[in-house]
Length: 281
Image (cartoon, rainbow, N blue to C red):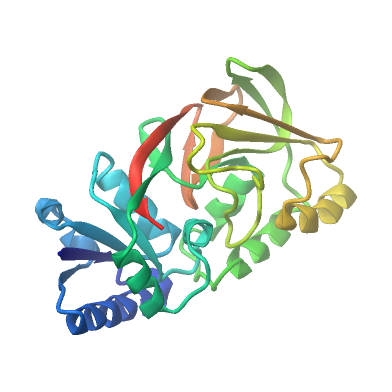
């Protein structure tokens, strides 16, 4: 078996590249062939390998699936970034060596992908408040886990204003002001916020969570509930599932993120692609 180890030298403040080297050394002890590909070395050469192991956080994974969005090779993720939400969805806590051994003896399973205006995602699309938070994180030093996200959440939570959006799907047509809109394939993002606690990444559906305008007190009171995934029954939260949805805005632009990567536009067309990738987990 030959394994391509793809990584980003900046991910996790250098953690990902060191972890990639550690993985390769361990594979050497198993007499398995591997090669490390840094971010500027991601070429079609990786198609010659039997498996592709992605070492990094959600950003690294997102960049990979957008560059190789039709890849059918078995994939897996190793925790090498600051935000590792999709990794946490697929894998239980274990040592690197245990994960390597587990992956080597396991078979790939289909995982859904989302697509928004031609860009692919695994966790979800966060619109409104979340988009503004991620935009403010650009060019700042990222801390581990949810620390960076939480810090910028607190910076925006007092002043962000709900925007008016038009949403359309087979299940629902809406024209209203919303504080935030989450369109999710995975359960969590932001380094550990369970935005869509009922989501399953292999059910062929998107989870839609709409949060109406909130007072400052409501925002502060509900934040811990969102973090724990206990918010779906709150009176200002609307929740449903769909396979495809469009979101548009009349004034300004939609501020959003895809798996933590900032994106903006006037209208988003978002759909689920059932079983689009194969992950070993």
